[in-house]
Length: 322
Ligand SMILES: NC(=O)c1ccc[n+]([C@@H]2O[C@H](COP(=O)([O-])OP(=O)(O)OC[C@H]3O[C@@H](n4cnc5c(N)ncnc54)[C@H](O)[C@@H]3O)[C@@H](O)[C@H]2O)c1
Image (cartoon, rainbow, N blue to C red; front, side, top):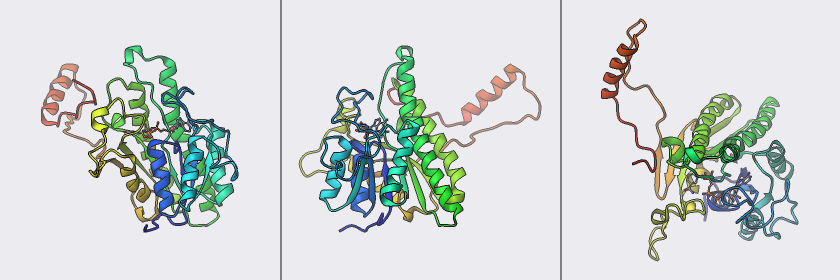
C-alpha cells in the first residue's frame, strides 16, 4: 500500500502528540520509519491548562508507551495498532536535558537517528505594546531554542558517526510559519521566533552538509487547535466527500519526502505547504542597487533610496495588516 519511502529510518518528531506533528509521525510510520513521538502535553499557551494527559520526563519505556493517556503515548498506540514501531518521549525539547534525552531515546531504542522533525511549539499572541516579557521569552524559548537544542544534539551524533567513517544520510525538517516569512499582526514574538528558525535553517544547512545532513524548513498551514478558532472560516471542514484541504495530513507528505533519503541534494530551502499546494519560498536576495563609490550625504542617500524603491517590488503585507 505504501512506497516505504522512509523504510528503516529512525525519525524523531517533536510536539507529535497532536496536530501537525501527530500527522507527520503517523505518515513516517506508514512509510516504514521507526518513530520517536515527543510531546510535553502542554496547553495551547504552553501552560498546563487545556493539556491532555500528563507529561513524563525523558523517554517512556516500551511497556508504558501506548497504555498511558499522554498525547505522545496515544500516537504511539495508533502507530503500533497499525503495525508500526514507535516510542513516546515526554520531555521538554527546549531544555538541554529534554533535547539530549530525546536524541538518546532514539539511539538507545533503535540504534540510531536519521531524521529530526522540529515541530513543537505554542502561542502567546498579543499586540507588541501589550506583550509581556514572559510571553516574549516563552515563545522564543519553545520555538527557537526548541529547534536549536534537538538540532545540536542530533548534529553531535551525526558528526561522531561521520568521524568513524560511517555514511550519514541525515535529514532535518524545521517548522517556520507564514508569520516568520511575512510577519503577522499580534504575533510579534512568534513571528520573530519563526523568522529566527529560517536563519537557523540556513546556517545548519551550510555547516552540516559536510557530514551528510540536509536541513530544510516548512511554513505549513492546517487545521489544528492552534488555528481552528482564530482562522475558523479558512479552516472549516468541507462537505462530506470533498477534499479536506486544511487537514494536517496534507502537510506531512512533503515532510516525509524531505525526511527521507530521496530528497538528496535538497538543503537550505524553505517550502510553504498547505492543502494540495507546495510553494518554494525564495529568500532575501539583492533588489535594485546603486553604488556611487564614495560616501553619501544623508539627503543624497535618501534621494538615491527613493529611486531604488520606485524600481523595486513592494513587499507582501504582513498577515492581518490593513
Ligand atoms: N497549524 C498551522 O496552521 C500552523 C501554521 C504555521 C506554523 N505552524 C507550526 O506548526 C507546529 C505545530 O503546530 P500545530 O498547529 O500542530 O499545534 P498543536 O498545538 O496542535 O501541536 C503542538 C504540540 O507541541 C507540543 N509542545 C509544546 N511545547 C512543547 C515542548 N516544550 N516540548 C515538547 N512538546 C511541546 C504541544 O503539547 C502540542 O501537542 C508549530 O511549530 C506551529 O507554530 C502551524
